[in-house]
Amino acid sequence: MKSLRWTIIVVLALVLLILAARFIFQPPAQNALQPGGRTLLEFDIHQDKDLIAITTFSEPPQFAIWLEDPISHKLQTISVTYRSATGDMVGKAECPACLPRWFEVFEQETGNVGFPTQDFPAPAAVTTATPQDENFKIRYEVKPDSRWICWLEMNLAGDFNQKYKEYDPEAKTVDWDFDGQPSLVYRAEITAIPGKEIVPQLYGQVNLEGQIVRPVSDDVTSARNVFKSIKIRVVSAEPSSAE
Image (tube, rainbow, N blue to C red; front, side, top):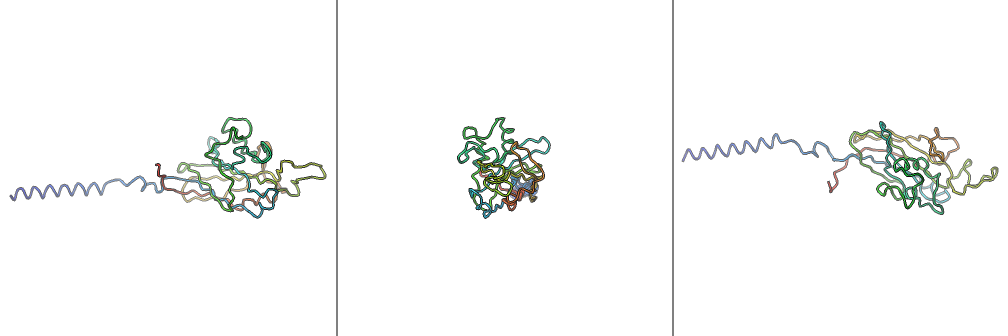
């Protein structure tokens, strides 16, 4: 009996030692090694609604955001407002001065010559309703530690000033497209490490051929202040329920 009792005690002790060893030396879960599981670029934008309200249409600006690989220089649109993405312009089929630089990006990405149309729009995944709120955010997932050049082009229709007039009595010309001041481009370089934050800088104005002209001329006035602030943050997020 004593022999059987000792045998049972030894077996139980071995089982407890095995369980304890597995608990102590088990590797940590993947989510513990990589908190959050996803890396996102978060664009936090504050637009000036008072300035927007005094323009001809009192409508928020059109804008597009795209990323450039600093090595391959491949371009990738991540967000563009609906009218520019679909060619759904009020009273006209197209508006060359709306986002001329992004229209060039669209051609490079798609291989399509010409502006986006309702028959050939930008992908729905990057098309967004024009934000009406004073503050809004746009998020886009990227690979951890990846490096990017971030571009943002903005244009506010009907924002006329002393240089860009609706009617020029000296030249006797009318801006029938209500273009107003030219579109402006902001630029930032960022590495996708959570916790990083950068403020894009005003980089230049864009001509109708989609070329970025630097620096922005003194004739561009209120357009500089349509976006009161732009910040890009790198944030972590929990994996989606589908993952």
